[in-house]
Image (cartoon, rainbow, N blue to C red; front, side):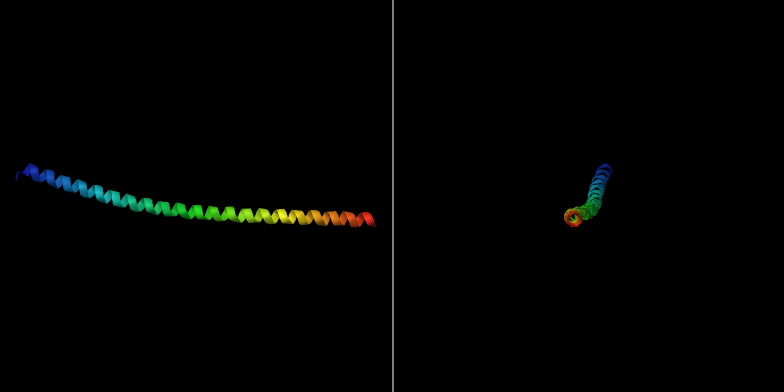
Length: 79
């Protein structure tokens, strides 16, 4: 075999190896970043659920305050 053929084969295998390693590294980095994003989404979803519950509690407290104010007005009006 000639030197040019050996040089071409070595270049081919070197390029193929570099491409495979590059793809593997890029895949690992992408998986890591996706995992980080999933954690952020989980935190956000947890916040949304907590806010929904807090809004329900605020609504309930508003109703209780209104009832207490109505009772106080009724009591003040009777005396």
